[in-house]
Length: 284
Image (tube, rainbow, N blue to C red; front, side, top):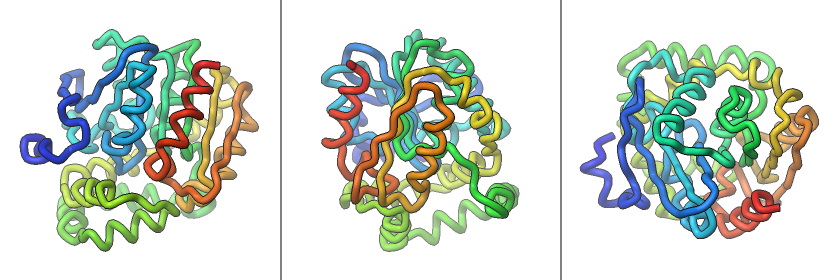
């Protein structure tokens, strides 16, 4: 995606900067002072996902949001490093390079799985993690084999991202979002339309999906002693609430909060609900 073209309408563009940390060039937004929170969006998302929650948290914390490799405005350096293991390693390297002492990770969907893997790799031994509709489970049955295989096949076809991005309309994006159980405002829908209309972003999301394997992360959950909070929207049709509850049962120090009438993008639907939950958990 072209930053010069998009920055006029991108949320919190004044807080954006670009950082070269091998192998990628990262788009980062940073605001606030206090304990450091690292915000990780889910597959197909970008920093815009935190547009309303981030400034509320920045009143009490130093908040950093990044675009994952190939997503949004982060320029992917090596396509082979888009699985959960290499991405976690590369984000840890970025944080070390920039001197970020991470006190807590807040991850949405696949971003939560990345956060757990980062903690398992020792990036913040005493840090806490908050998962928002955390994708801490594999697809059931054949879907667990077929979906990643389809994504892999699609990424091998150089025309796929062009076809998807060119066929996207505001109406199709709205249907896609509503299919996750969420209702996002017009500004949010416009951002998602902008993302899905960009070939590089679609290609980045497909590449991540094709390399996504959670078995190692899930197997280590019983050893992940970090204080954890899993917040779930009861209307999530993308990652069912039972996924977080099953993960919490394996974690030594986890709590689950269910929020009625909210879907997969619950933090975008109701940031004013999430902010106090997060603040109370982190300051308890």
